[in-house]
Length: 320
Image (cartoon, rainbow, N blue to C red; front, top):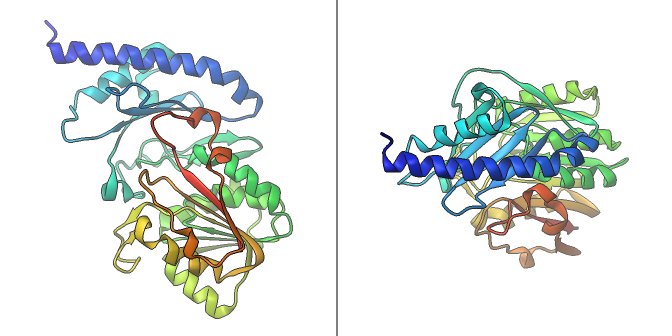
């Protein structure tokens, strides 16, 4: 006989899988027309079902928002229900555990060594994702509309991508006709992944420079060299405990200092797109000597990420 806890979890799994399949049916035609393979199906819409569910071209990624009382049997029960509801093999449902705060800053911590990458489309671009080895898959789909904004503004401009991760913004900028791009990340894994994504989109390496270096080190050296940019994307992790980043980085305390260093590299009239997914972020933009700054969050969150409980990210356009 099933224990009451398992029975309760199975009821939750039925609710979750019903909600996810309904959302999938609502979104799939629209995104197929746009050639978008990755989109969100569920994000903690039901208070007791603390998870996010994403569609990746025939695969599903389910991430549980962990807390002290999380039960190890809960996530596999949800995953099994999703595989049954969508009619896909259980091996195509990938389970993740998301932790908040400093623990969530471990963007590159390996969970597995499969090294399997799936190629997914986003409009006329392609990106490699890894659904097994890291908490994050290699593509932040919530920024697909921000990427398109950058693409439409970047023609004949010099573009800087800080904390570039796997380089999706860089690929959009290159396809948008950027005169040059510079992509910066401290992780060798990330920089190697950027190279793969550039090759996948048939973007030659000429004028597209990759730096594996801590952000602050790059910013200081670029200032000394007199490097200048017209458009920059700055999307740091909320926290970083890396030794590379001095005594660690906390976006709440350090964003103004970071942005001042970026502003020093911008040409007059240049644009900075600054974003964070920190849920309690309190911006201190008024200290920046800039022409204008405008929160554009509502324009950058796609339909599948609109959520009553929280904003998946916040985003500002800063004009120097």
